[in-house]
Amino acid sequence: MAYNFKSESEVKEYINNLGIEYRFGCYSEKKPEVCHLLADFLESIKKDFEKAGKVYKNNCDEYKYGKSCLKYGTYSLLGRGTKQSDFKQAYDYFEKGCNLEEPDSCLNQALLLITKNDRPDIKQDVIKGMRLLEKACQAKNANACYYLSGMYIVGVKNDTTSNITDVSKADSAKHEEFSVPKNMKKAFEFALEGCNLGNIYSCANLSQMYAKGEGTEKNQELAEKYKSITLEMQKEVQSNKTLSFQEGLNP
Image (cartoon, rainbow, N blue to C red; front, side):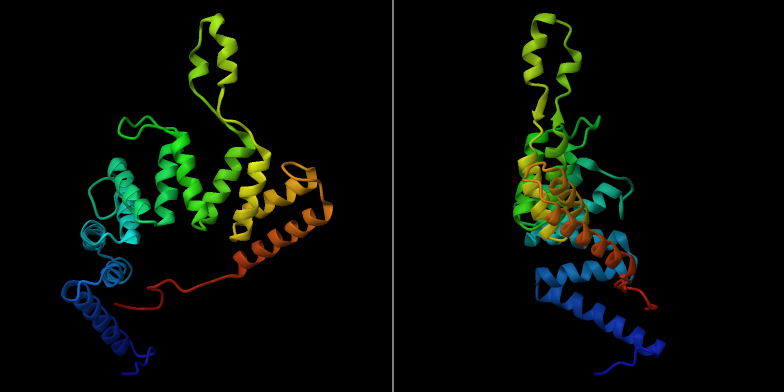
């Protein structure tokens, strides 16, 4: 049946039928991808975050659908559809999603590990976090590549050296000051990968690296090339306007 989307009544009928179709595909046919679409429908069209969260959670737990694990992890982190945020639960669901090869889940799990916090339920572990970022980057997650590049540009310091009062231990501590030493060669490699995947900040960093000869040979021509790519991306971001799932629809 063809719908006239200029007609409010036909739009409502289309939306209602869409919900029925998703429910049938999820609950009767038990299709994980349709369950995820049902949750998206409940979230975006119905604005029922509590029900959407339950569907995402069940689809992750029962059907091992990585994208739903990612969504429920995000819900847990934000406290969406629940009474309050739960960082440990968010971490656990990001981990499930990552184990199911969902790169955005690996990215979010990594960021929870890398970010310094006072939460006893999530212990900071920069090295494990970077391994997860590498996994996400290898799976073509542009943001993960960008974060890795940035970490290698500045290095990551240990927090333990600041508490050393024994002078005899100070020299050896200096060698362990960085848990991740600055490494411009690796920074360049991850920036290149991030830029190739469309991360604007990676492209900007790449231009600077070529201009200064950091992590690679100095090359002004390539510096200008990646500067132009960055500016073009910036224009595209500013002019790009896309419709969201629910925009223009009245449920």
